[in-house]
Length: 125
DNA sequence: TTTATGACAGACG
DNA sequence: CCGTCTGCCATAA
Image (cartoon, rainbow, N blue to C red; front, side):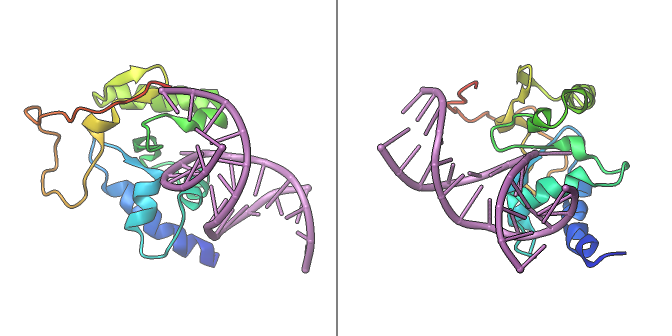
């Protein structure tokens, strides 16, 4: 096993913690890790991640499925998995980030339906 | 060893 | 508001 795997393990750990129906951005995960990794590194880690990892719960900070840049087929897989978890889309390749972004510090494990949604200028594309 | 390339994010004009 | 550029850092060639 290489040493880099060890660095990725912290990234994987956070990804595994993301509750169903919620997401984190690459930058969020990078900020959570003590290793001082960058958002790009998180992307790299996910590109070689184990299959059992819920990688589909990681999107970019705008909520876009930027994996499409790499493979539109994988992007479709991600979309279907998110839809299956009840994630709401605002565009074909973009979810409602304000609604589904997970706050690890919050004790709540599930999204609260009653939560007031923040008014945000989500510029679609 | 050097160069190029991203599943990103933030700054700039 | 929007397209570009730049910093970031692990891999591949």
